[in-house]
Length: 101
Image (cartoon, rainbow, N blue to C red; front, side, top):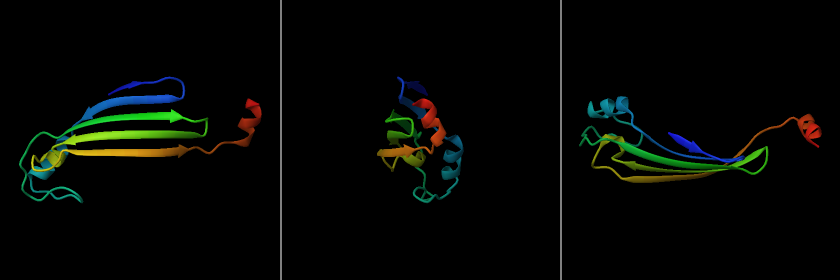
């Protein structure tokens, strides 16, 4: 996985595959959202890109996009696109603000 960024910003792109999950579904395993006991096997491939932008030292906005081909190692499923927009806040110590001023 590679990342890039400037001060206050982060982004990246990556790929991953989980062979343990493939074996589980091939054996007829069922999951909450995938697995019907009949696996038409194809390699699962995931491409993920994310970006994080720091608004200030306490808040960050994030965006994440995932493209999943053959989810659950099953050619009868997908492809699927998943995106996420989020905000993250951190608690802070008021004394840190006084030191910065």
